Image 1 (tube, rainbow, N blue to C red):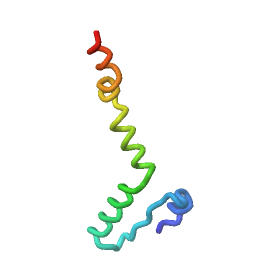
Image 2 (cartoon, rainbow, N blue to C red):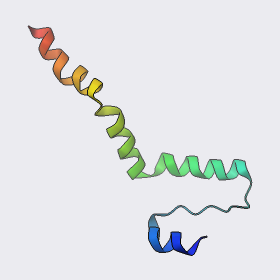
Image 3 (cartoon, one colour):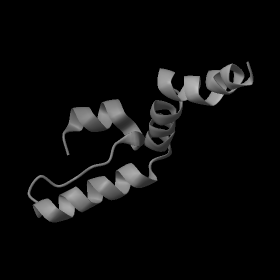
Image 4 (cartoon, helix red, strand yellow):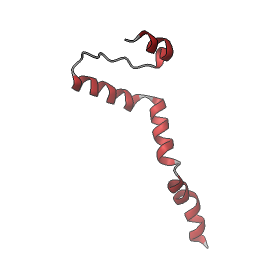
Length: 66
């Protein structure tokens, strides 16, 4: 591990071995991305709070009532 990464990232880093099997590294990264609560929140916000989704969820029903 790069010492600066550990110093900056602390417990929030996800260390991987650079000399590991590429498919194992990819699997490790994918598993981490699926289980990390911060990434899950970012994904939910990106998907649920676009202008299109806000319009469809909040404004379009109001326009349909008119």
